[in-house]
Length: 156
Ligand SMILES: [Fe+2]
Image (tube, rainbow, N blue to C red):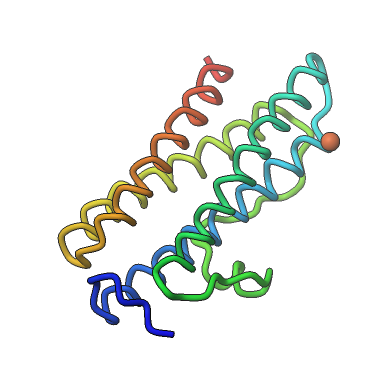
């Protein structure tokens, strides 16, 4: 069934490709945040165990929204780990139980995603004529900006 929503096939495809890269990055960051939720140690263990839980739960919802946005513009969401590892531009570091290293790793990833989304907001609107996806990732970027602020506040 054709997705007849006033955006050309080429533009829908271009947007879906970028959104699948966003999805891969969100999935990697979700996994990293869960890793730290499980493996953090040291003073304020419970505080960080819970803080990471709040963040990975938020990321889980964001992942779902990105995948479903891809479906709304007529494409399939990448959904295999092997595909995420090919598409992601984020890196997985060695295991660490140190919350300061963990927080820095997470902050770097959020900031990378924010910069990526900021570029896509104008690309989707101006180049691909997909105002809906542009608006959607504006909201997504703002969620990452808030999460990054929370993490940054611990690193003072
Ligand atoms: Fe848990």
